[in-house]
Amino acid sequence: MTFGDRLRVALRYTFPSGSAHLSTFLSSLSMVGLVLAISLLIIVLSVMNGFDKEMRERILSLVPHISVYAQLSEIDTAATLATLRSHSQVASVSPFVRFDTLVIKGSAIETAQGIGLSAQDLNAMSSFASVLQTVGGEGALSQADSIILGSAIAQKLGAQPGDALTLVVPAQRQINSAAGATFQAVRLQGVLHSGTELDETLALVSAELASRLAGLNGQVSGFRVTTTTLFDVQQIGWELSDLLGPGFYTTNWMMTHGNLYAAIQLSRSLVSILLFSIIAVAAFNVVSSLVLVVMDKQGNIAILRTLGASSNDVAWIFMLQGAMIGTVGVVLGSAVGAVGSSMVPTLVAALERQLGIQFLSTDVYPVSFLPVDVRLDDILWVGLVAFTMCVVAAIYPSRRAARLAPALVLNQDR
Image (cartoon, rainbow, N blue to C red; front, side, top):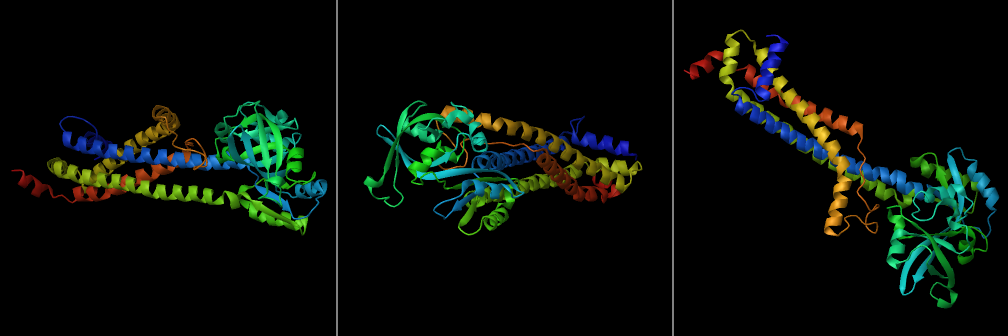
């Protein structure tokens, strides 16, 4: 038999044609199982990739990669900035002031972490400007009494841009004393909606106001450092500490968000293993389906052998059938998975509106929406593994068909 003859017979057994109803039904059942398994795996991987992408590109674009703090009473800000910027892997450096505060509007009170930034520091403000809903960019903190709140804090306070608010900042050494607290009237200049956990805690004010509220008298709390490589921050932090000398220490994003990032990676790996096992089950279904096809087509196999087909020809017919099942399952499953992944955020948002609930909230999860990132390499990898499993699964039925004795089969049919 030529390859074309083998392919033609395999096509008759795989797709609807003539009276081969049982074999085409079993083949279709195997294809459906593969399509469901592959599409489900691609959708879940895309969601996990979305969390990974949001973690790297959204959250880590707003928080400093490295924070440098000083234990000294006074810091030479200009000299420290020059020293930090001299490191080859430092992309940008911005001084900041940090303090804890209560934000009050009427009878509503919320806690927040205050961050003081210079309105003229474009490096510091540019990362926040992209997620400001109502006030743009660099001018947001131009007034001395301006404040920008995370959207979750503003929503809990019922505050809108332009509203007057009051900040209550405890004195550093008299935290439990109301007399030691500093009260400051501010006006809400903008709302920060990043869709991340920062919306629950962040309050931005000018560096001058923050320094006065924190009792630093014009000094800064530390420096926000953005690096060129995300995963070398620990080594870079040590090198920066050596450059600055005694009295300085560093923290990095892996200390504050590293566990979350590791959990996302671990979840992705575990889910991948689980769903690949589902594909393995679908491939096992190919084995059982082809075995039943071989039993159903014993008479046809015997006739082919008597007409001159070799055992290798028969084996190749069922190997090709397994490959066809794998090809159709991979193509359709990949297409359904890619389309389904792109539709997931819309479907989840519609379901949230219909039910009136929010599945993801930034007080529990790192983002308030379901992110999706469809990657071609994932689709190709899943497709390759699934196709390989189907081809391997076809080996046993093919060998079984090749070992059938034509005389014995035809004698049983008499």
